[in-house]
Length: 377
Image 1 (cartoon, rainbow, N blue to C red):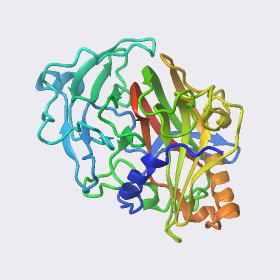
Image 2: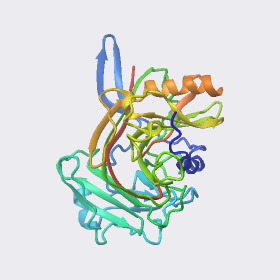
Image 3: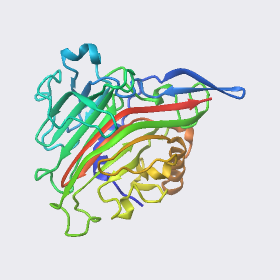
Image 4: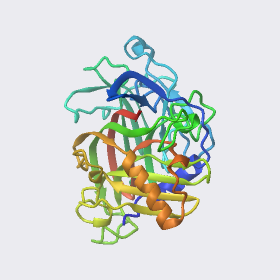
């Protein structure tokens, strides 16, 4: 059983237990006939992608406010159509954080030369980039597409170096606006606002799939042994890093919260079986075990559909139906911990994707084409 990522989740608890419901799901006009039943594909994100190179930044301590947004420089208005941001960067425990004082309104300063990525088989040109002593965020544009929903990739880089205290986790995640930041409206995501559950919509239509899609690249990884105990890489304190997808679910009746994650990459994979996203293991790990807050995770390979773990320097295009696993998480949470097992009380109430690290570790990860879509009949 994996107990991954619990230090990071302490921070997320502050931000996400109290969720504000303000957004509407967007119905895709494309419909499919299944016999006598018409199915619809519904986007649970108002702005998939991100579609624009505009990002807010969270302070390292949650206050309900965000800094920014940083948008494309004026010279790129025609090319990128800057607008109010629908996504933000979380930067928990950043030793040299981005703040309102060091974030430009437009990313028109000198772009850090490291702002580049080609792991996806096509060049991604930098639109803007910002950096501090331990972190970098770059907005990259895919010039090969004219789509309004997949033109922007976000690259995050972080380094613990000597500044990050051992047993402290430094996380950088891309997340849709909403949830823990209810003052920023309209929110990009919260289908629970419209009565969505893991079973049905408010109108009584059945939810048959929740498809998560994203392109993810592990661009750079370096681990040095500052905090670790000799050759034992599996017992804390550690120097390590990981890449994950978070899809937390919330219960509107019991007010329970389950921080569910999909493990994509871990620097210890192949060495520590309990935290190996590449392992042939479909079990659900539990890292929070006391109600009203549970935490669970699963290895990406257990989701089927050909999904595999990431390796350093590698890119993957992920697309999988997360609904069967979320339903299984609810059932196991009820059986093991006495949580509410009624699927009609649970809904997806957040999304985050990115990296975390401890100790003297440096990582760079690029993410784009993020979608969360439901099929209803």
